[in-house]
Length: 299
Length: 256
Image 1 (cartoon, rainbow over the protein chains, first blue to last red):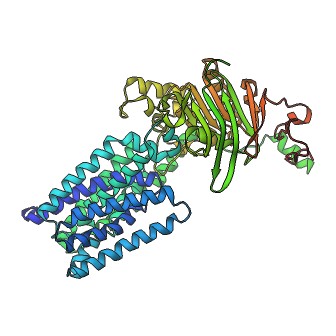
Image 2: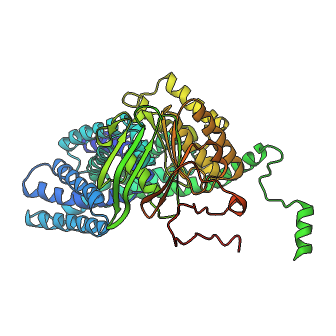
C-alpha cells in the first residue's frame, strides 16, 4: 500500500473513514423523518461559511460549521413558524447560501479551483488542521447519533407520539439538524458540499433493501459508508479521478447491486410468511364456492 | 366520580389556521372512567384530544392533566397515547419491538433500557397478541396489526390514562376483537380511557360516558346514546335526540 507513504493520503483516508461513519449515521434519521434532501440544503448554506473563511483568512472548515449550524437553526425555525411559505423560504436560504459563498470566495480573491475543491471534494487539500477539526466534529456526531439513538428514533418515527412520551421534541429536532450540519462540514473536504447529501441518504437506502430492523439498517449503512468512502478515496488516488464523484457513484452502484440481490430475498421471505400463516387463514382470497355460485345466480 | 379528574378541559377554544375548531369545550374524565368522544367528521374530536397532549395549542380556556395545568405537566409516563395513523412505519425499516420500545422512553433514565423495560415491551406485545411478530418489520403487518403495534407502544409505559384517536379506524374484524379485549383488560385494572370514536361499535359495552361534539361544541355529555332499531345497524351514523331542532341528520345512504 504505497499510498500510505504519503502524508496527505493518510489524512485523506482518515477523513474518508470518519465521513463514511458519520454521514449515514445522521442520514438514517433524516431518511426516517422523510427529510432526505435536508443534507443537500445544508451543503448549499455551508458554502457561505467557506467563503467567509476565505475572506477572513480563518479555517474554512470551522467557518462552514458555524454558518451551516446557523443555517439549520434557521431552517428549523422556518419549519416551526412559516407553515405555508416554508418551502420557498428554504429555497431562498439554500440558493442564497450558495450564491453568497461563490461571491465571497470571489471577493476574497480565491480561484475557481478552490471553489471546485469545496464543491466536489479533493484529496490533496485535507490539511493537518482540517484533520483535527474533522476528528472533533465526527466525535460530536457519533456521540449524538449513538448516545441519543432511542430518543432520535422516537422523534423521527412519530413526532406527535414522542411529545406525549415527554421527550423535548423541538430540542431533539434542533439537535438532529445541527448534527446534520456538522456532518456536512465533516464530509465537505472529501466528498464536497454538492455531493455530501448522497452519502447521507444512499447508504441508508441501500441497507434498507436487506434489513427489517432499524439497528441493523444503521450498522449496514455505516459499513457501506466506510467501504465506499475508503475504496473511492483509493480509486481516486490511483486513477486520478475526483474523489467525491467516485464515492457517490460507488454508493449508487452498491445500492443497485443490493436492490438486485434483495428482490429474490424478499420473494423468499414472502413465501416463508405465507407458509407460516395458520391454516384457515389463507393468504390469498378465496370465495366460498356456495356463495360464489349463489351470487352468480343472483346477477 | 372520584376526587380530582384525570383530564379536565374548561372552556377550551382552538383554531387551525384561522378556522375556529373548538368553541369552548368542557370535558372532564374521572379516574377509572371510560369516555368516548363522538361526533361527525370535522366536529373537533381529534383537535380536542390534541389540545390535551399539547400538539394543538389551546387559544383559550384551561387544560389540566391529573390536576396539573398541561403546560407544567411533566409526568408523561402516566399518559399513553395512540395517535390516528394508518401505519406505524417510518422512512426506515423498524421492527415491531423497536417501535413499541420507543413508548417506554418515558419510564427510562436517558433512554437506557434495563431488564424491566425489555420485559415491559414483551408484555405489551403479548397484550395485543403480537409477541410472535416482535422481530418482524412493521411493513410486513396488516392495517389492523399496525394499530395493535401503536396500542402496544402506548401501553408499554403502563399508563394510568390512555388517550386513543380512532383506534378502530380501518381495522379488520379480528384485530377489532383483540383491541376490544385489550382495552377491557386495561379498564379492569383501573386505567382511565379517553377515546375518539366514529361509532361505538364493539367497544360499546366498555363505555361509561359519551361526549358528543358538533361544530366545536359539546352537544351531549352523558350515558352513551343507545342505538335502537334501524339505528343499531352497522354503518349507521347515529344522530342523538339532543341534536338541536332542524339539525340535518347525517345519512350514510345505507338505508335508502
